[in-house]
Structure formats: structure tokens, C-alpha cells
Image (cartoon, rainbow, N blue to C red; front, top):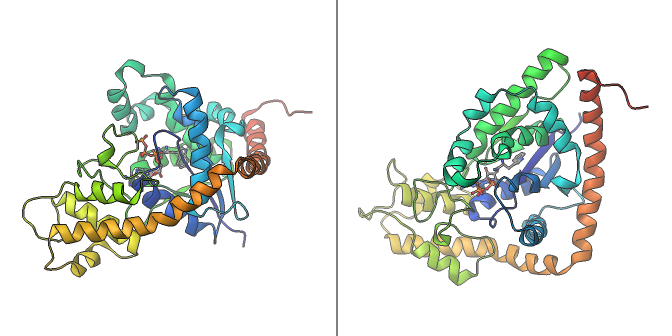
Length: 332
Ligand code: ATP
Ligand code: LTN
């Protein structure tokens, strides 16, 4: 049996947070042992919000170095920049002609982001999920490892695939499925544990950057919002404590409930110290490897060039197939 295909990506906006690491990257590393994996720095997505060109270029390289530092192995997985494989944008157009305005209007990320960027509600922000569907469908992807916040986008990608399969033949696209981390699919902000930890949070105390220095991590966790009842338990309504337990569980490989049992009888101070220690130890090798990789531009260039070449070959197969099915004249 052929291995299943995996596709995922993170957009190079802000910096990679502990939420991205636990919800996405950490799982990507495990999956590359069992599947064909495609991991992209989805740079085209990031320009739905205005970016400074030089800062964006640097950040894209930094994200790629981080993928590698987290343990994504270019011998096992295909790593590339989305903008280097032009078929993503091409397929996106074909899919957008099979996607309804009503569907896109219902996307909560569009509603949230347009509320946040009232001065720049561009068409790209609206059609963002179509480009994401193109990323996924282009590689006939079976599984998409993402955090829980992406469920709605993934559902749309499935709907588009199913719709096109009905029209152009059931074997047009593989209908993808989401693959969620067993623990930590939704890490919350340390400052407002009712909203997700986000890399575009203007308050850096809300998130942990995977490259934060150990003392910064310790300080941010110490300041994390909890509650006033002082009991360590994984319970409805205890958002702050639940979040710390989820982080601890995700990093130490146990459920948050199990982690809570281990802390029975202790106070929030002890909880925070141990969560901080576990996070610092988890991220220490990532930070050290990152420093080596980001300094080696030649290696980085080789990784993304090879990756784009391999990805393009796969992407072209799907694109040509879809163009034929839609009725375009075959290229000579
Ligand atoms: P932004 O704040 O700019 O929207 P983000 O932090 O949500 O960015 P994305 O690039 O949208 O990051 O997401 C990258 C991956 O990380 C996705 O798979 C997403 O589901 C996952 N992810 C993001 N935030 C979290 C979180 N708080 N907990 C778990 N997974 C997360
Ligand atoms: N929208 C995603 C990033 C993303 C993605 C993808 C994830 C773009 N294309 C394809 C999985 C598969 C997000 O996390 N905000």
C-alpha cells in the first residue's frame, strides 16, 4: 500500500508560538516517519495583512529554519515556500469558481480578521480559505495536521473537493481529513485564557515564542492569568489553569487530567514553576539548533530549492488533470 499524503503549513506572520509548536509542528515531526509529508511556509497567505517586504523575506527564512530546528527532516519530508510553486495560485483560481460567496462569508477567521483590520479588508482576506483548499487539494492530500481553529477551513476544502468530484468525476480530488493533536489542539493566550494563543497578539506576554530565552519563558508563565480558588484541577471554567495543564500535558506526553492528578495538593506557584521548566527543556534544543541552521544560508537555500522542485512536479500533475477536466485545451 502506498503511504498516505500529508500537507500542512504555517503562515509567516508574527513569530512561531508555543501554540503553533504544540498544535502543529510537534505533530508534523512525528508524522514524517509514517507518511509522505509536504510542509510549506505559506507566504502567499501572509500578505492578506500588509507586510514590510524586507521583514517578510527574513521571516520566511526564519520560519523554514524553525521547521528544520523542530525536527522536520528534508530527507523525509518536502519543505518549500508556497510562492515558489506557482500551481497553488493557479489552482486557487479554478477552485474559487466553484466556491460560493455565502460559504466564504460564514468563515469565522474572515469575520475576526476583518474586524481587526477594518482599514484593509481586501479580497485576499475573503478568498484565503480557497487558497488553503488549493494547497491541500493540489497534492491529493489525505490528512491535514492543524490546530482546532482550522476545522472550518478544512471543512470548506472538503466541500469544494466533494462538489468538484460530483461534477468532474469522483476521482478528481482526494477528499482530505483533518488530523488533530490528541492534546493541545487549542493552546490559549496566557493573558486571556478564553482566546487562543496567537502569533499576531499585540501583547507578547500572551504568547511564548519558541525562541524566547528561558528566563523570558519563566517570566511569562509566572505572569499567566489563573483564578482565585487556588485548586489545581482540569475543570470547566478554570480556563487559565486548564491551559497550563494542557501545555504541561502536551509537552510531557500525558492528558491534562492526568497532569492535574500529579499536581494534587500543590499551589499555583509550584504549577507554574514546573510548567515553565518543562517548556524550557522542550524548547532548548529547538533554540540551539535554530541558531546553527539560520547561520547556514547555503544549506537553507538548498533545502527550499530542492523542496520546490519536488513539490512542483507533484503539483503539475494535479493541475493538468484538473485543467483537462474543466475543458481547457491540452498543452501540446
Ligand atoms: P495568526 O494569529 O496570525 O492568525 P496563528 O498563531 O493562529 O496566526 P497560523 O499560521 O494561523 O497561526 O497557524 C499555524 C498552525 O498552528 C495551524 O495548524 C493552527 O491550527 C496552529 N495553531 C495556531 N494557534 C494555535 C493554538 N493556540 N493552539 C494550537 N494550535 C494552534
Ligand atoms: N490557514 C492556516 C495556514 C495554512 C494551512 C494551509 C494549514 C494555509 N494553507 C494548508 C494546513 C494546510 C492557518 O493555520 N492559519
